[in-house]
Amino acid sequence: MLIQRYKVKKIIVFLLIFLSGCSAIATVENKPIVKLPEPAERYSAVQHTKHRPLGDILFLLAFSGGGTRAAALSYGVLEELKDTHYQVKGNDVRLLDEVDRISSVSGGSFTSAYYGLFGDQIFDDFKDVFLYKNVQSELSNIVLTFSNFVGSLFSTESRTEKVIDYYDKNIFKGKTFADLKKTSPFILINATDLNSNSQFVFVQNQFDFLCSDISQFKISRAVAASSSVPILFPPILLKKHEDCNFQKPDWLSRAEVQATNKNDLRLQESINPLNFYLNKNNPPYVTLLDGGITDNLGLRTVIRNINLSGGAHKYYNKVNQNSLIKKVVVIIVDASTESENDIGKEQSLPPLSDILSSVTNIQLHLYNTETNILLKNELNKWIQSISTKEHPITSYLININATAIEDVKNRNYFNAIPTSFSLEKEQADMLIDTAKILLRQNSEYKKLLVDLKK
Image (cartoon, rainbow, N blue to C red; front, side, top):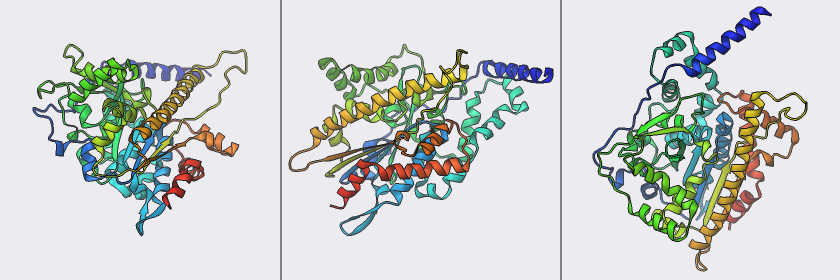
């Protein structure tokens, strides 16, 4: 008993030292530039559409946070879309090839970034590279080995750098945003900036405010920022440089006028963070953590971009290159769970782990619900503004989540899978199959498939 107590105390002391440690100095990898990238070199939705026109379907996927669970569900949706074909003017077309945008958060960003970099190769090796691998254990071995732990006490390098190095070598192979395929969907990786109190999106328009070129920025660092869980891993820093003569863009000035004239508080909340970066009196660094803090579904990026552009009609004219859109499809892959605990079952007070888990779940579900309702309302407004009698546009909002799992046993199994970067092969395969089944059974998805045959 004494030995057990000694071990427990030793572990507690170890963790306290580990979590406190000495102050780390962040590695800053976004390099300053003298001149912003030329239009043809920009990583932006507008430029991407020039290489990959929208066609008659505007197709968006949103991958939520939730560790490897989210990555596996997202992968399952990609695989189902790959295996779903329909005819266009006598030609066989995969539904996956119609996807134009993927917006992702945290665990979902591993799947979106990998697909954006390697395309169909994801169906050959992503399971072994990430889904079946105990990434959490390997990261723990890297960070918590005795030599690394002792070394960290005398080093100012952030633990997160070891995580980034692992992702870079083992998953993303040193690739940067310049390596994202122009023929793949446009990938939006989302994080949270603690300085501006807002969502941070890895696109050139965001990097303009930092006087930096995103094309040379590593995918591994962006995904690490998107999935950097508070407390467990220190934030990732970017620096605001001031040597490219960047001025407030016209679209931002117009948005300010619109927000004032219409007393649009939501639009103003999107404007404030951008003005924060323009104020030279504010801190010179951007401090990034898990994207799920500000938006666990990856949907608010889409809403924000359209609103900042002046509305759906202006955004449509801006990104659309001589295409006649007939359908707008949004598939939301929501990996959140409804895990059970023993809170309230006894007079004894619940453990801290149950309290933290419940608090997180409550906040997550309420915020996800509000985001879904907001998108549904906004989508209806957007369709009305760009649709005409001559060219009507139909929208399909498809939500994939655990609440739609009909079998109670399977739903409980799903909810019991932890939010971590470690899954058993059986769990990963179950999640992939679940995503496929949920997509096939979704009434809006069925309607889409029927309409595609017309």
